[in-house]
Length: 390
Image (cartoon, rainbow, N blue to C red):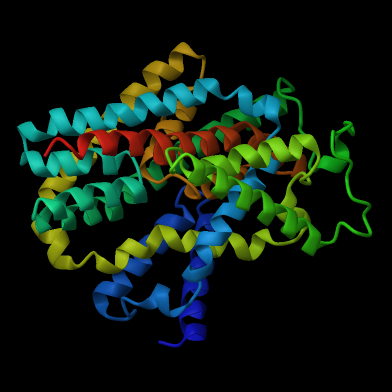
């Protein structure tokens, strides 16, 4: 399939997903719709398994994802980001709870190897999957390597609807508080906020062109990748991108809402979103059929574990059960799903630009931080430990 045809198919699927998400008011996420359509297309032979590669879009995803994380850092005020320590604890506990429950309880029902492989992957993402696949391949256990891919493909089918439903309920609660006057409306953009003196003066508007803004974002992404390499990637480079995005915005080097100001988010987000679906091409009906029981056991145990852990810890910090479960569910899909679903819910629930901005300001930072803590940090550490247990 040619690059332009592949790209057209992908963006049509995304567009249909957006329409369904809008029609259902974000109860059915675009990510869930796209997952189902792509999987059905691969199984029916409508889409070639090389669809994503043929589009050539994935070749840009590695660069763009670092830029997007830097950009997201520019949308978070440092004082607000520091206030998310409760979210960090809730998400980390949820991640560990999934892994522990799936491994220790799961092996009482299914083979120990399936429980061991599924535990860190269900609570993580690509890095955890690669770690466990490497473990399985070194042990010459190809069935476990396949199971790792299957768990990676399946986790979003639970995580997306759970997060959408919980965030939708949380957004409605916030909307009621806004209507009652107990929550103050947030400004739509930075222009409505009081200017604050920065250490690094802003470029004059005539020089601060979209190209200049993007150049600054890429430079910060480059710095983040370099710092990550200094520590031998002990901390994921995307975490550094987020941290330096926040710091450089606070210092004044980066603009607030950088890529938005450069009118670049519209093309960046869809390309990065493709990374979520790449594993679907290898999930054949035979794989699903032969491993459906172990998969269901892992998913059911993991879902119960993160829900209970999130609610209990969230209650200690005064979070609603809806927000707590949504934070815990980030283990199942991570970034950029956390941002996409938050934006979908905010757009569908708020009736004015100010209400949408207020709702998004309440849920997106929590979900963004939760996704980074679970997928990029905690699950990677858990996978590193558990990969030695086979």
